[in-house]
Length: 114
Length: 113
Image (cartoon, rainbow over all chains, first blue to last red; front, side):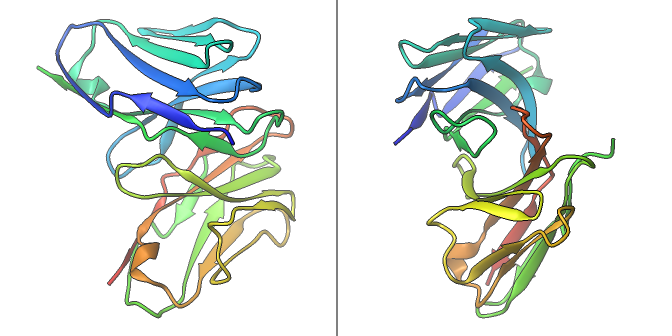
């Protein structure tokens, strides 16, 4: 059974810091891994999707890496801003299943202080 | 592209009442998913449709829950005889045929008193 874990559960940093969020999964037979952002009381916004054949994806100040063999992904946020404050979730589809349900970690709640 | 929409955004009900939520996916997205999210947790899968066919249901979806997608467009999720434990955010997502990315709606926040 695939399990997804995110560490830390919460993180508070001063504005301008670079930071890393961690995601681990137990079954490496995944097609891809996706990072989402969720603002309080809102739905999820897709940030980055990494295919299993890729090692990293970049979008602006965000960089996500994927190491399937070790069951790990990281989301790197450069030069953090107060507007980055949100909960960040990683998710993988069930093993050997493309386009099916997603299994989520519990999220990392990020607070960037001005 | 208007995105995934959900209605209502908030619902407060008394224990024992029935509630129904609606989800309108992005047009031409043939897959539609329902998830439930409780405070401080990641979303948990409930069920998903490909066109009008319900392909998978989670064991979380008890007999009190039913989902439909009669014409392969919008979907409804009904909860009968609500319980306080049903209080959660109910999220809907959709994806294109064969697509990897799921696009989420704003969610329906259910509070059962």
